[in-house]
Image 1 (tube, rainbow, N blue to C red):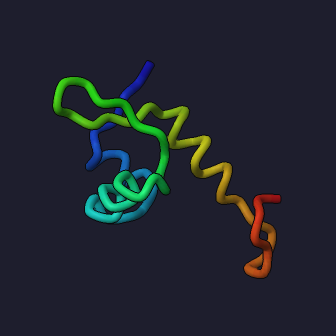
Image 2 (cartoon, rainbow, N blue to C red):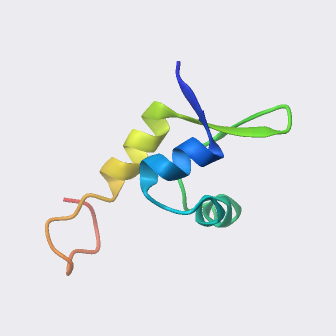
Length: 64
């Protein structure tokens, strides 16, 4: 199982690391794992988060 730190996960999602931290607080971002005091993201959780955001047009409110 591959894990990414917050910096690598944010890079994979094309967002700032601070945005990812805010999403974590708001419960909006991909699922994460806390190991000790470190936050990590599994590749499959990042992929699932991306898949949930797939849209066909800008007027869609739910994934296609």
